[in-house]
Length: 245
Image (cartoon, rainbow, N blue to C red; front, side, top):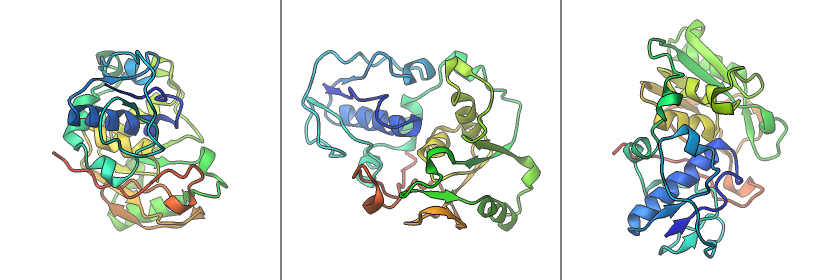
């Protein structure tokens, strides 16, 4: 077996999805069972039935991919070697919304969306806060009508409280957009990965910038949040390129 006993307490939603997907991919690679905590919030959002962690296994070093099973994954796994273990098709297969969550989405609505990540990014020594002017420039450069974009931001979360989770409505809004202008955040990265409606996605090119910055956007779903040498946890973070299938 492989376990992820820290799932749910190590990072927020985007980080947790990356940890879970890496665990699923490694369990497939080593032909073994993945066990996760009983109280992980993903269980009430996605239609998953992985067994509950049943024993204490030796933890891996931070962000080290194990060479065998019988270990407890410990890390964020936001680097290319981890991403190479799975495809977007795998992610969508492993993480399907539960019917009661999917029913909260109006399938007749068509809209575009912007993700403004603020919160803990503001004045953080390791992260870049993408300026609003950067999003406006991206819309103008690509011929988009700004009035068609729904803004999602942790500074002003959607008041809906789906499944008792105050952030879930925002995630679903991003996930079901037609065009998405992402933040340098795994929250909108995974919304784009799991989206059934997305036609175009643009990501900010933050490189090793910190503080609030005007940046260019590039088309594609690239998950570079910060320069790895600056990250306070020492975890490995890079620009992920996920295979479709």
